[in-house]
View 1: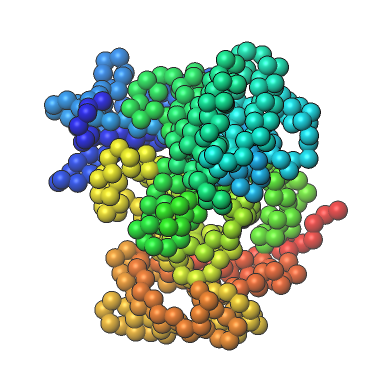
View 2 (view 1 turned 180 degrees about the horizontal axis):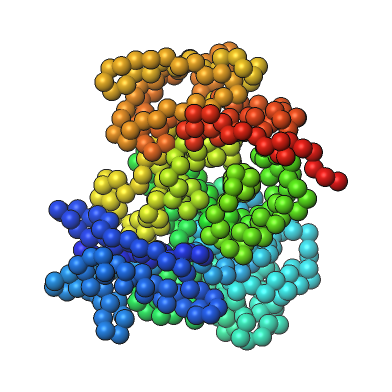
Length: 580
């Protein structure tokens, strides 16, 4: 790798199903995305080698550009040479493979354990067990949990610097005892991020048995957490773990960045935008095997990664986690016995399966809504974002902008005016990874429009009788043309807007209905592939009991968001009660 600022950058992302390659280069003095490609991930049988899936993508990139990327031995050429040969920097991120099994130890669940959970979320680690002073287990129970959970990583936190020592030392003594009971080849790494006055004691107690990593204390003061130092240590552990796996060994040797978690990059960009835009940012990444949601405020991000919520590999787990009743509430028909489980199994076996008809499409949408609602609930905080990022093929890669905003509105428990952007090229993780290496590239790529404007979502809150006027909206377009629109309770209204078009809106709601807590509001909005979507449904769906009524509502909303002139007719078989 060159020691100068790189000009050409290759970003590889290894997903559970798809592998993507992005080629960035300096064009007219600014970094731009100049080429991209995708293919199937080759982790697991029969090859179990991530680089095996990368190489055909690289060859395809070469065939569609004037740049040579591979040498005669199919190694990535670095650094860049004359005549467009090679690249300066190779960045690699991944969300594929089994997560590291982490056991969390702290003094109090509300502070230490909660902080550790936040810290490991963007690394996709699986918290297999927790130990703390309020777990009710006692010394023997904690020892059993340490041994039987078989962790690959033990993370210990607790106490402020120079604070209490006794309780934490007792926990560490149990860790030492548990390690002595585990076979030498399966002992975990211990990462300590607690009271720093005990750091030397931790090394003395444990370093002869296992690798010990010391990170800065996550508790800077009473009630204040700082996770940056711990996450820096976690990044090194994540990279080391991936490098040991046969699937990543060849790819790691070709990567200048090491192996980084995809979700970590997304979290970094969400935090950046929350600082720059001075508003809350919510990033949603729905994948085949996992779903991640990140809420960022004032540069601080909180993430939840659900490794059993997804639309492909984890479809069956998603259905089991949320329950069939949750999905059925979003369907305009009574599902046949076993129908939902059958569809989830089909998606698990063939993650790239596309719905064959409207019935399957509604099951897919219901799975997306229910899974995303579950993931958002794990945040433990009702997000009220002003900016939304859509990542993952299900939302970020789709061209159905208004429909994506409708599905997102179904999953969100928030109201107000929200700008929506998508990541159609799967660049968020790469941008986050480049932030500490080439920050200029991140700024220039964002300024160059690498993220796509989906549009604006206005979601009303409150209660009012269905069918009555909820909102009156005065619209002024860029050319000076004005119009008015009245939207009723229970309706969805869509206004197509060109990408560069801007409009001014004056909103007036009826009594009992609000936009961002107000009854009157003036806003300026920009267009996008989904234009403007106004959601005035309130809690109408929850009030419906008859299947005919629910089906009419769902199909009407789908028609409005998908730009259809009329809604799809409802087959009689959809309305028939399920067979016993």
